[in-house]
Length: 314
Image (cartoon, rainbow, N blue to C red):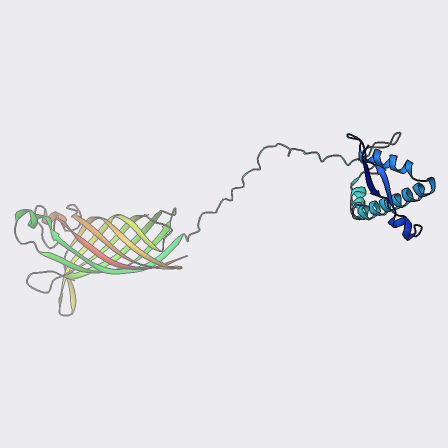
C-alpha cells in the first residue's frame, strides 16, 4: 500500500510548534474512496486527544464562515419582511394562508354598477317669440307731380297734348296686418293748360288705397300700391282779378305702383311711383256737352305719378 505524507491542521492556541510542523504519514486513500472517508480514517490513526481538538477547530472555522456568508441574506430578509407582513391580510401566515382554526380574511365587497334608470327623454322647451309689434295708425303729407296725355290723341297718331299738374295732399293709414295696410289719400292738383289764354285746371281727388309690404320687418320697406277713387276737375281763368269757371268734370281714377319707405322709429320717408288712368264721366256736370270729344279734360287719359311721402306712425 502506497504511503502519502499528509499535514494535520492545527488547533489555534493549543498546538505547539512541534505539533504544527509534525508530519504524519498516513496511508493513501484507496481508489474510489472519498475525501471525507479518508479524513475520518486519518482521524482514527491520530490519538484521541489530538483528533478531538483538530475536529473542534474545523467546526469553529466552518461555523464562522457560514455566519459571515449568511449576514447579507439576513439583512435582506429583515428589509423585505415588514413589507410582506403588511401586505398579508390579518390572521394570515407568511405564505398568505390562514392558520388552522382562524376565520378567513374579510375583504370589502366589490362596487356594484347600477345602470342609470331608463325614462323618457326630457321635454324640449320651445320658447315662442312674440310677433314684432308695429304701430296701427299713420298720418302724413305728400307732394309730387302728375303728368297725363289724351288716349284719343295717342290713338290718332298725332301729337298728344300733355297736361302736367303739381300735387300736394294728406294721407291717413291703418295697418291691418304686418303685411297689409289701408290708406285714405286726399290730394289737390293744379296746372296750366296748353293753348291760347291763361286757362288753368285744378283737380281734387280722393283715393282709397291698399298697400302690401314685401318685407314688413325691414327698415327699408318695399310695398306694392293700389288705389281707386274719384276726381273733380275745374277749368277756369282769371278776368279782372276774379276766377271765371269754364267747365267742370268728374272722373274716375285708378292707380298702381310701387313704393320704398325708410323707417326711422316712428317716422317714415317714402318715394312712390304710380301708373295712373283717368276716365271722364259723361253724365255728370259738363260731361254731356263734350260727348265724343276730349274738350279741356280728355275723355280718357293716362300717365304717371311720382310723389314723396312723409308719415308719422303711432
